Image (cartoon, rainbow, N blue to C red; front, side, top):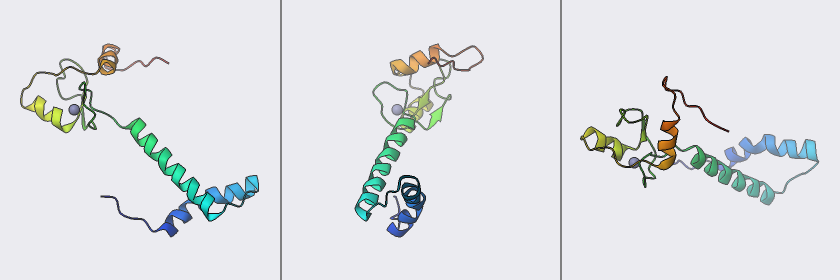
Length: 118
Ligand SMILES: [Zn+2]
């Protein structure tokens, strides 16, 4: 559970941004404008968190991966969530993986390094 943070501390954390807006752009923001910026930054943080979230490689699974390279390792370096890691420990055969995960593993060099293409 996330702890509520005193809004005064949040405002203090954003103070360098507000100082920069005033000093570099001669903009003195109202409290409402500052709140708009804080809300927008929160949304950006959510988007970035989702962008960098490591999702389970199993096809159709959107759980956060908690393990990498352990389960069904004879067939790839898969990132798996706790549920699918447990399935592997219980001896279940590898479920279908997402196409992008299969493509990623197919691109892995014999030494294990991934070669990403731009
Ligand atoms: Zn999963």
